[in-house]
Image 1: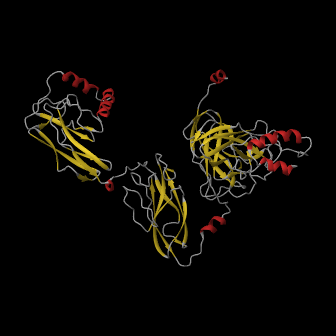
Image 2 (image 1 turned 180 degrees about the horizontal axis):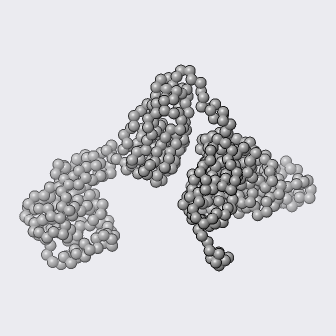
Image 3 (image 1 turned 45 degrees about the vertical axis):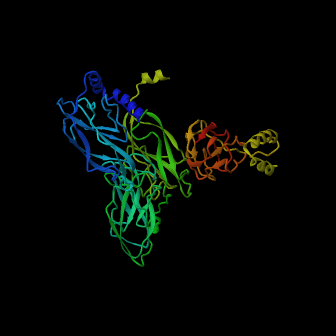
Length: 415
Length: 153
């Protein structure tokens, strides 16, 4: 621990404590600040051997001396230092400042600390205006505490503003069959499987007939709290006849709701005893070919926000489906369409074919295109043998690229 | 003759190579070669988007395939300048005038897939891509990638 302390000291000397250490070094030779006789520091209401919650307010007491902020030169004063899981530092040098040596240079007499589960030691040490212990040093006894693991709060993953989860179907108030397909979506964040620790991402949890659970801990996993840890966006559930509520709650890699939590509004569905199953018919009726649930089309190159050359090869990626030329009717296949500088076209009819809607009917998976300098948007849509997008549509995000203005002279010199 | 050679082809990559080489040589004038091999597009290239040569990958990883100057079509679809991908794992190049074998070392992406997830044991492995026509026979000239080496950790 001593070595650790010294290491910290060295590291900190190079960063924040420069001035302080120098000041301390100068005062090393002169006499140290004397402490008052019978001076004492102690923990208020915290006993040795106590079991404490993870998050705890600790109060410091002092007797026969007074508290003064760091830097204030006044006889019989000092400020607190809390030593966590560490022994007393060298008493003739400034107290280090790190996670194990917390300074209260503002003259604070209480602090809220968060400790991980397990055994810990706490000790108080008074320092003078230059953070050097007095002579004789004023410190408290070492107290041992145990943090109750049940009280440990996990840190919640932050969520971006404007992110939302929503139901695609059923609609609020719908009457549904006992076996109902629930489809849901996520906007403003990325959908990733559980266990993937990536900023601005999460996976769905469906709350069936359950209120929102506590938002600072793992979402329960039971029949009323269904996890979609493989980043699914649809599921089939079987409900008993009667009224039910459904709600979505996004969880992070550890199934913990985000901060702020991302949840949908509660929707109500009614299950009648004899309702014809109509979900499969609906998709068949409008003639769109089904796509597998986890199919995705995406840009291998360029990525969103990238700066590209006017002549660039755009490369397409396709997950969980295959490529087939136009006119080939084969389940789970389609061909790529590149939308340039246009809004997403209607998805229930053949995609237009013009300079802004490029078809890759020969099954191409990349294409060299020429774009004018400036900002452009690109989007990929997979469509079936008749150029009609699948159901659900397999569609990439609409990415923005900036085309660099390349001067001819530079181009020549490169060659 | 053909039957015997096929069964041999399944007995191991190395053997396949030797046997294939010997037979390609010996058998070329004897075995009636198909009249019209499917032509590939000039400048056609098949290549790996991921993983790259020399990459370290987890046991389960996605292989992403790029194809230049040609299109992808599911097996069985006859269309000029199209084909489907075959992924050769720890295998030497197969005879180029007959259907690509289908086994653990020769993965067919017959539905026109352009990426697939592989699970390999830890260690060094090689991957190579070979485009096949509607009958799984390599084009003429063949469209194949460089053989890459990856390290599964």
